[in-house]
Image (spheres, rainbow, N blue to C red):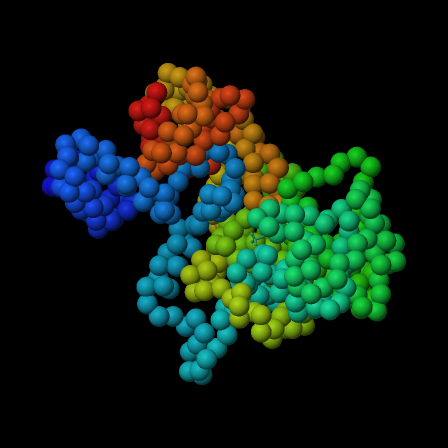
Length: 434
Ligand SMILES: *Cc1c(COP(=O)(O)O)cnc(C)c1O
């Protein structure tokens, strides 16, 4: 037993599964071997590895993202900054003033502190944070549009993925969808014609992961806001990725920012915390104080409320924007702002050590709902292999798992999403497999 647990092939599992789980699995395999009376050392190790592998797949663990997709939803979207991680650890280790007003010594609001930073960095009158952007949209519809009508452009009746479809969300919230315009051309007059005494909201959604090109027209946010004012109906915009900064400075197509939506006069803007904000999973609502106040008193808020870890991480992330250090401190912005020269220098370390590797120009992707298909120039290391799929599978099985991209029968390791401190690990893993 001692020898088996100390065997390098087994000991590596302790890092992800913990010593107790490894020992428990070993007990089980030894018990079985004793009962059946046949148990050579190698057979036991082999069986134990198979058992530990299946346990490993039930465990969340760190993965190296070599896909080049920065806010990769399947890989956990935005990695957190050191500041956000430290805030989570510090606030979760003991008690906190989560819902406690220290001045008066009574129950306080869970949301006031994060709202104050959010209002500072976005310029919004007021704000609210819930579990994710889907919940934020649901809360808006439930608060304002239940039993009433919501007008949406036909060009924006989208499915984001993961079951989030605008027409279905509207239906679930008890609102009636009223479609305006055609698939490719929507004018403000279409919205005007769709107005009725039962209209509760004018809703804009970010088309996120698809694009219509050619003979197109859309009603602008400003036109909607002007119409909404005349009709006494708020305009809500589901922005999705929620960039607070202009990405055009990084050579990525400009993405409408939260501040731009607010400047257009949009009443409520909804966005995610873990896409281009670079924080934890959360749904953020910013906008007019009287609209936010109505959502605060909706009982549904209790069901979609955020926990202290989210608030700690989100607060710390937002403070980086307030301090102006977000470019250097938030991991996704470090990835986005790495220059092609930076990446080429790192690629040379791969090609120098791996004979089968060549450095190539590639396309990374911003990823994460909105901007899913926006490309960002990148550099990848292409690994020559007869069966790239098989190499990809082996890389996924290495520790930590490495998720690569297959492109035109080549295995690509995109350097934009690999943290520079992981280069050595990736090089060693590839070297051991080819
Ligand atoms: C990503 C996205 C959502 C869903 O956000 P979650 O935070 O994952 O719930 C909703 N709307 C748009 C436009 C999105 O891009």
